[in-house]
Amino acid sequence: MDYSLTKMEKYYPHILMNAISDRFEEEASTVIGNLTWRQFQFLLLVDQYIFYTIDSTEGKINEVKAYPTLNVIANELNTSHQNVKKIVKKLENKGFIQIVADEDDRKKQRIKISESGRDFLIKHNEINKLIDRSLSNISEDDIRVVIEVLDKISKNLVNPEQNLLRVQTCDKKRIIEVDTFKKCKIIPRKKNRPRYQLYGSRGAVLQVSGINRFIVGFYESEADIDKEIDEIDKAIKRGATEYCLKHNCEVEFDTTGMPVIKAKDNADNSMRKNETSTDD
Image 1: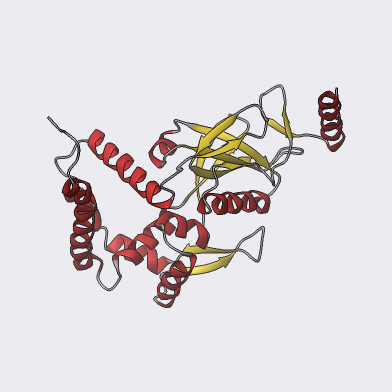
Image 2: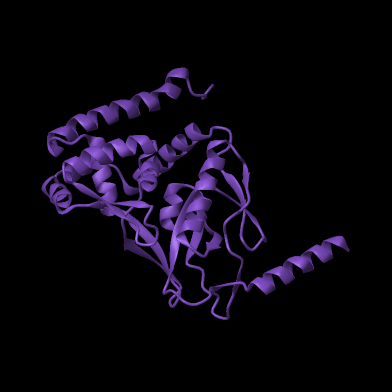
């Protein structure tokens, strides 16, 4: 017996996803008033944005509330920077968000939810009841499977031929295959310690659980790690299958296992040693 999918079965997931999206937006509009579902999602993301930090004294990852940039929200909503700017303008006019300058880089703009915006989310908290109703009688395991499948479909549409990017880790010891990247701030700030660490992972679901998450590189400043992430995004969009780090700093590890920025002399000597070894 032939158990291969029929043409209709292949089309049906997309037809169903579109029908669910339309129905949900129709239901949501009766709950969230004069905002579109997209604008409401934007407010939620800004309000719930989490920045990851590494506590070097305890060796654990912490989650810290922070203000996201336009690029961060654009990536989360899977839309263009231009579309996000339009949403920002409308929400700013309603007094729901504020644009604030980054403390470390005054040229960079971050998005802060206003008191009016937070009050709006609290007032329209019944949207959670709609979410719960849509997921009723579905097990947690099934929900996670659906998320994983939808995540794969999304990534296939972005780059159908190659979902994973091969990246050499900063220690030059291995090549890892990843499709998602997240920056992590290292705290407390100590002399000769890099300020940021870049993680790579396979799949959004696995990233949340910490499974298949790898250290890709270390960086001296947020500007450096942002440049790296931007370069990686460009590489993925043009269909690249491999990427070499460009803006990371060389590190070595102290007796506690924490990274320390390698002294320039040591890095140069190591490079010359490798070159000599290659020549031999």
